[in-house]
Length: 444
Image (tube, rainbow, N blue to C red; front, side):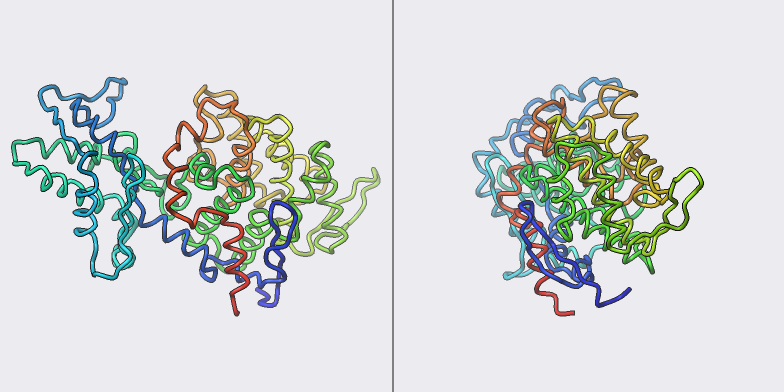
């Protein structure tokens, strides 16, 4: 990779945030702001105290059975005024979790939520990200037992079940009061996909429904997973960095300009503009012209062509969702943009065609298969969307930011606590600006 390669990052007003910064400054290994975001994900737990109290009071633990019946153990109800004692309990949790007096353990009360961040040293010494789920849950269970002086026959087993659901059979965030931003390994699709487990709605909520910020955060998560899995090894490192820069961070203001210039147009207008830009910039060239007049293009720089094409993919999705004020058409916009781009140029589409294949299945499951398949509930590691690593979820996140309430499963319904969480975790506020600031600091 050319270490002298540079890009300029623009915000959602078309204003430069970081001018001519090295492409390498946008790597999750190099960018301080990205590392802070990823580290925060690995050490943060959210505990819903109201849910915990109600679960114990009713004896309802373990979520629901396969047939939909609620798991409720009559005679095992435990009525504890946990919320009334929350300050003392929070202090006990903090004392148990911290490793030293000056570490970065954090326990905060936010309405009826307990926000817990385990120490960074604990994250560093662990084998994975499960500690953020298990340690706060265990500490809170002990804190409640101590606070209310509970004995072995006073329902301490119910406290554990109310906190962790069906653990160790599985950990279901809807079953226990404890949830983490990264899903537990028993719920994910394979290795190295932890960063891809945040749902589109959660990403939208964490970024306060700001379109370009949601795109930036989802792009970080998707491409960080590519780095973790080895998909960004060798020549694919530049492939992912360029894709993240142009689609995720509005490099060279391309996404903004495509939306601005063709907001009242069609997907074809965006495709023509992308091809025109790529030709003028020497990213692609005409290889030969057929007797019919059809021109076959060839890439001069395949990775940069993918970056241009992925910026167009996002612009086409924003154009569609913005015009309809609905996210439901986003998979269709991605599908037909990808298909028409390939037909117009004879070049591989976004992510070497994987975005087209992913969008086709995504469109089917959000429109035809069953009623519960809405854009916002999917995550990058879902079997539907995992095919394209980095380029589909940012588009879905943008669409959900622009949705005007047409979905049954809105971020305010599925991820309401995440809106609160961003108020105490500043790394999720203005992520695009933070990334650009960190890129400016990079001295490589």
